[in-house]
Structure formats: C-alpha cells, structure tokens
Length: 96
Picture 1 (cartoon, helix red, strand yellow):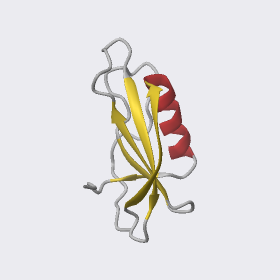
Picture 2: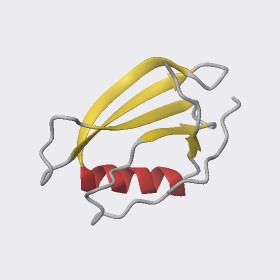
Picture 3: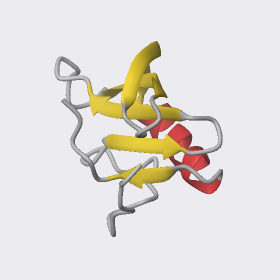
Picture 4: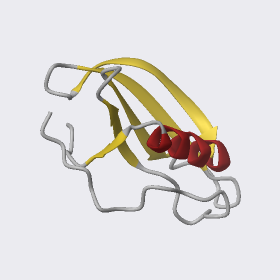
C-alpha cells in the first residue's frame, strides 16, 4: 500500500463538537480499513459519525465491507483515538 501518513490531526477530544473525526485509517497487521464520515442528517447539538469497516485487498484498498455503525461524536472520537494508539495509520489516499 502506498499510503502516506499525513501530518494532520491524529487525536480528537470529546469537547470538539465542531470537528468530528473523518477519514480513513488502516491496520496493516489485520488488513482492515475503517472510514469515519459525518452523518449529514445529524443536528448540530447531537452530531453523529458513521464508521464503515472494510477488508483491504493486497494494495491496501477497500475490497469488501465488513460492517457499518452510527456513533455519537464522543464514541467516534474515543474509537479514533484508540485505533491511532493501537497502531492504525491515517490513509491519505482518496478511494472511489
């Protein structure tokens, strides 16, 4: 996989309601990708974030979806931070 690790914000704080975690994370050991995206229909005082977990192919691209979940922003921030702490890397590639 030719994904660079971006020099972007890697940790999110629960009080950060303006900037929910968004983007791709990759775990080379497990061959999994996870995509965080803001739920567009959530109201500003109750932001939600979808996570979509994928099996990655040999190029590190999403091949097959494993599951999707809707999280509160607090839960999404906690999940993002745990994954980063566990060795997941931010993916800068834009997948179709």
